[in-house]
Length: 173
Image 1 (cartoon, rainbow, N blue to C red):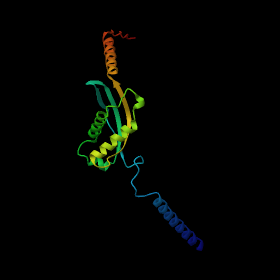
Image 2 (image 1 turned 45 degrees about the horizontal axis):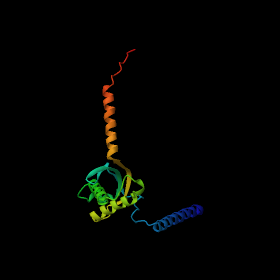
Image 3 (image 1 turned 90 degrees about the vertical axis):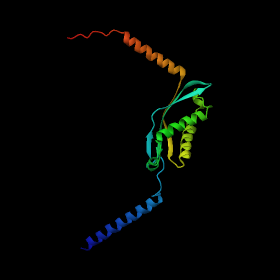
Image 4 (image 1 turned 180 degrees about the vertical axis):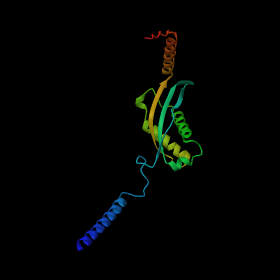
């Protein structure tokens, strides 16, 4: 009987010690702090492809195409009175037209980190709160006017050759 009581006391002491230790360890790791942006608690929202015509000397030089992903707190995005997608698109246009020195034909001069930071910072400044924590690039392209014309001509030629080809008869065996 004494052995059973000693075992029960031992189990209770071990359980209390484990619970006490777990609370101590959790307190040191910052329980109750906000999660870091890449560690959870945020929504990841993808934009549609944003197409911005780039104009130099009153002519369209090409199109900047981007598909972005941004991280936001769900509570903050619910407070917006306009769609977040419209806000992101507007900021991409504003950034590209406010920085005409950006040359998309020279990939070495593109600073994508500055682009992402500028989009994030200008949105947060405009909203007046930390809405966007991170802007990630899903896809980014630049199509010159010549590339667009070549692609259009190639598609047109492919369509005309397919229309002029006669269908082959199907044999029934």
